[in-house]
Each structure stands twice: as C-alpha cells, then as structure tokens.
Length: 401
Ligand SMILES: Cc1ncc(COP(=O)(O)O)c(C=O)c1O
Image 1 (tube, helix red, strand yellow):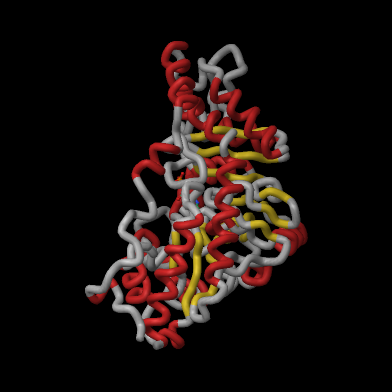
Image 2 (cartoon, rainbow, N blue to C red; image 1 turned 180 degrees about the vertical axis):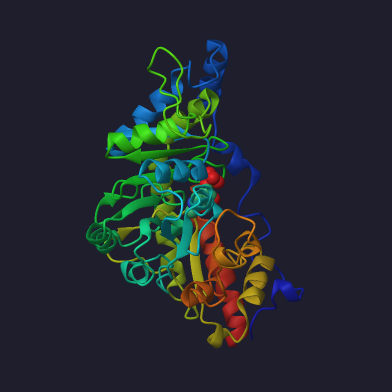
C-alpha cells in the first residue's frame, strides 16, 4: 500500500521549512557589519574617492588569477560593460542561451546588437559548440555562454570555434562561482567573465557584480564604460568613451569583500550536499539526477532534476506540487518559457528588430517543460537531504504503485 500524499490530506514528510529565515540572516555577520561601519566612518561612500572598491577589484582578480577586475552594480551591468569592452556594437549578432535570466540579454539589446539564441544540450541545459555553430552568421561578433545552475559549459570546443571565427567569448558566471571545466575556473576561459552579487547568488552584497579578464585592456574599457567614460587618473574631467554609471558603491564593496572570502567554503558545502543528495536519489528509479558533463565540476547554485513522467504517469507541475505539499519546495517551471518568448522579447518594444518564434530552440523548450529545481544551499544538512529523498520516493511510489 502506498502512503497517502500530503496533497490529498495525508501526513507531510516534513513540517519544518527546508529553507528558513535564519539561513538568510546567517549569510551576513559581524565582519560585514564592521566593514560597513568602517565605510560610514570614512566619509567616503563612493568608489571615486573611497578605496574599498578598488581593493575589492584587486582581491577578486587575485582570487581568479585574472589580470584585473572591474566592480559594477549588477551582473547585468557586468555583461553590458564586458560586451562594450570587447567591442560589440549596433547590428552585431550575439549568440546566447535561451535558458537564462534577462540579465544576459538586456545588455545585448542595450548596445543595439541582436540576441541570437542557440539551443541547449538536452541533458546539461547549456549551449554547446554544435548548437552555437548552427546559428552563426557573418554578423556574429560574440558569444555569451551561460553556465547554468553552477555547471560550466563544455568550453574547449566553444573556444576553438570562437578562435576559428574571430568571435569574442563572454562568460556569464552569475550562477556558477568556482565551477570549473577541465580544471579551469569559469570566468577565466573567455575574453571576460561576468559575475552577479545579487541576493540570490552564492555570495551577495544586495546587488552588485564584476567583470574579470586576463586582458587589462578589457578591464580598463569595462571600468571606463561603468563610469560614464571618465578616466579618473587624469587631472581634468573628460569623457573618453560612451558609458553608463554602473559604479559599485563603497558600501557594496565592503560587503562583497567579506563575502568573496567565504565563497570557497560555500561552494564546498554545496558540493558535499549535492553529492549526498545525488547518492540518496540513486535508488529512486523515476528520478533523473542532473547530468554533469565530463571534466566539469559543478558549483550548485541550485539542484536541477527531471522525472520520468511516463513512468509516474503525471505531469511535471502536478509532481512538483505534490512534492512541495510534502514540505519540500520544488520549483517548476524554472522559467515560464525560454527567454526569446518572454513578453519583452515578443513586444517589439526594444531597440532591435528581430522576431523569435515558438519552436526556435526545441530542446530548450522541452527542457523547461521538464526541469524541476530543488534548493541546494550551504545551510542544508544530511537530514534535509534524507527528507528530500523521502518526499520524492513517496510521490514516485504513489504514482507507480
Ligand atoms: C545567468 C544570469 N545572468 C545574469 C544575471 C543578472 O544578474 P543581476 O541580477 O545581478 O543583474 C542573473 C541573475 O539572476 C543570472 O542568473
């Protein structure tokens, strides 16, 4: 006899919330508070006169072994600055992923360049050299690879393709701090790596971001773009290039400087939790654990999985709702639709004339109809992993008898 589901009035697997308010509070502590107080006491809240932001940039560059870093106000701003720094301009085509945040796409539009969507690998949900090659045209100038959920794209063939075609590669690392591909950290393989420090990411300063590059020219052009084109080293104010005001404040830099020191431990704990959970899910036949490409080390921004819907005989939304009712929050869908079907992209009310139709990237559309998302934070325990596995097993067994 199978147990009565909580969704049908049965007992829940778990009453206590999996993700608790104290987890959010524990992300920030005395060190962040002290760093913020020091900035307030210094009287310099702006990075033009303060020292924290420049120090944060040096530390970040050191951490990643990059030549330099430019700190900015968001991950979206980081991508905007990076694209401008590598020379993307009006009419250029920029290839990216249909499974991402609008933050990967807005900067392309803001430069009056044209977003072009490559389909994803059906198992890793990342774009690949093969799918990118299919959408290249003589107008393509850059690729923004999105390392989704913490998993790096398979970079060597993408870098080879970009090299052959003279394309710039920007890495969107917003979800993938310390992910690696063949031992190389994400953000260090392309022309620039872009990171977000918004409150949902591995580390946070509320909102913020940064660009890293092995090319100091890219870094200084990104920094100029983030500061209205002003070269602050000169004696008199002169705007050298078109730019925005994306300056990180000293307050953001104070918090980000403490957070960057925590990222190793955060990613380590997430990897331990994901390994434990994957082990526990192994025995549940209908559950398909995330596939990690060979040579890639995941950094688990979240834990994506799918279910053999034929075997359970129900749809993904019902399945996710039933597991959630057991006290284990499962997000479905991850995105309502691929980015190119978002209303903004369909409205025609953006700077670029391009039309995107349903069916453009069939594997991405299929993936979004299947992919479910579990939390995978550094605060989750062995017991939490057991509860997740118990809830998934209970719902699967209910359906498979
Ligand atoms: C893959 C990806 N790229 C870019 C961004 C944009 O980052 P931000 O929110 O800091 O602008 C996000 C944020 O959710 C993201 O997940």
